[in-house]
Image 1 (cartoon, helix red, strand yellow):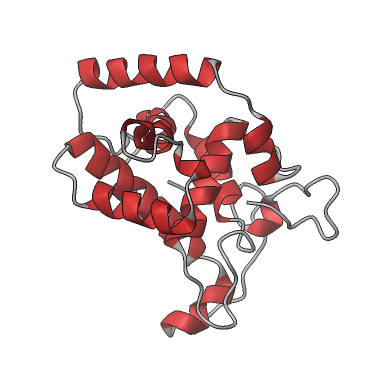
Image 2: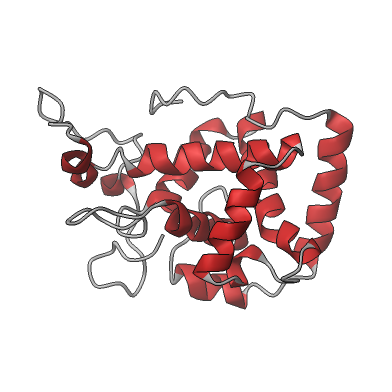
Length: 203
């Protein structure tokens, strides 16, 4: 990856083609019957690059759940973590990484339907989301566990690459001034969100 994060281009779901194919078919069937208005309201006017509106909304909800900002640090939304991951995926089009991220997001969103809540992940309360994610972390079902771990890694990596978070982890920053890189995935590379005051609202 251009970020140097070490995420494999081969993806992060260690499952066979048959199992992934079955999950993909199920996810596609569910998405075809989904009203996107719920997801659009979650991301405001943000326009995804690689992910769909629904996938970006799920990723944003996950980032909100995973990140509990320290005092004076930005929230996951303020750091635009989800949008930066979406941009990073644009550098890996056609790779297994992209397909695995998409499948993992679908799995996290729809799996709670099979549980006691009977609702999608993005409609759960904050407490219910954390309870579900803890179950994913300790699950013996490898695909569920790896989907959780892979998405958590991506979110935390991109969140803590925002320089506003560095004081909270004791990092003083690079020793040379940062230069703008047009092919990068920092906030400065993101297009403004229509209707926002400063172009930085949303995921």
